[in-house]
Every structure is written in structure tokens, then in C-alpha cells.
Image 1 (tube, rainbow, N blue to C red):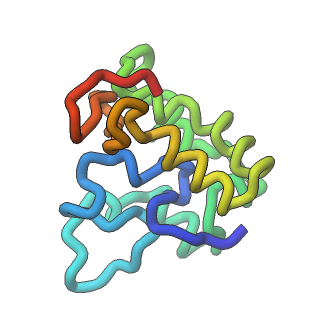
Image 2: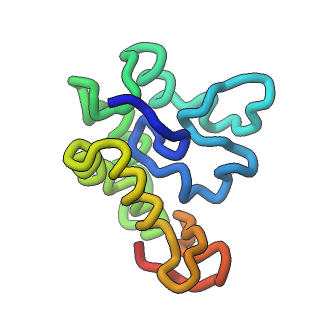
Image 3: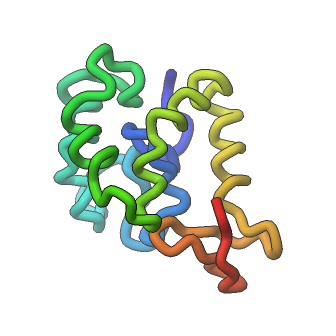
Length: 138
């Protein structure tokens, strides 16, 4: 699988739904350079592992998936907290990625994180449309 968009993170998270996307961050898959403003992804050990150690675009391509890095940082972080449910669904979301292929998966994610009322972006953590303010169950 080859990355086609900065909206898809190596760990499976859809960056397009992050409140920082296109503001202080251009996606976990974007190049890191002097204009990079998001420090969290620069230091992300999952991103570093994928790109620098394992040489994969996505964690699902690694024979160690789900490794301790994914498990600790995402799958077992904030258990039971609804605002972090996007993290806990990563194994299921990766299955969808493998079934659909990258392009269709990206279309699926964009639609999934769009408000059914106005088409605005629904951001994870709050699950509220950025345009109309409606709460959306993603």
C-alpha cells in the first residue's frame, strides 16, 4: 500500500478529522521540514517506527502489528473514554483499509467524518461538526 494522502496516518487514524489538521499540522504522513508546526507528530514513535525503522506506509504492513507501540499509545490509552473511541477502533479500521484499498478507504473516511446535515468536518475528541455545531455519532 502506498500513501495517497496526508489525511491517513501510518497508525490508521484519519488525520482529516483532527482539529489541528491544516491548521498547525498537515497530517502525520506529511513531510517534516522547517515549516512543520506540529511537534506531536514529529516525536511520534509510531510514525518514526513506520517510516524510519520498518519502512512501511502503514502499521498494518508490519508483521509485528499490533505491536506494543500501537497497543500502548492508541488501543489501550484512555479506556472507556468516548472522545478517544477513534483510537480503539484501529484494528477494525485497518481491516477496512485492506478490504477497500487506499483510494476507496480515503473516500469512506472523508464521508464518515462529514456532517450528514451540512457536510462540515466532524472532529474526533468532540464529535461535533466544525460548521454547524451539531453532535454527530461517527
